[in-house]
Image 1: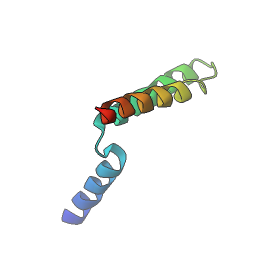
Image 2: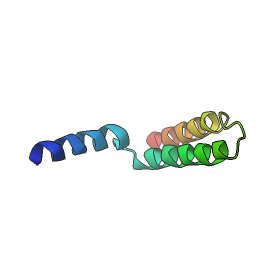
Image 3: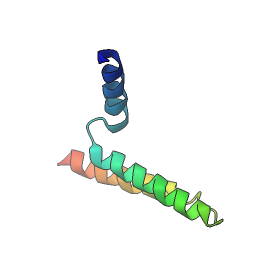
Image 4: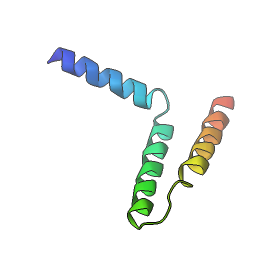
Length: 64
């Protein structure tokens, strides 16, 4: 069981890392993309602005 727990912790650290806000933002953007795609509309345009906004937010917090 400890091996499974260690793997889960490694995956968590890889995905979330030090910035949980960015990880939550990416998950929210992916969910929004999925919701828009279900309507039959092209949803490719959601992720680029989301990534740029989250990057800017992350850099702003790091520059403080």
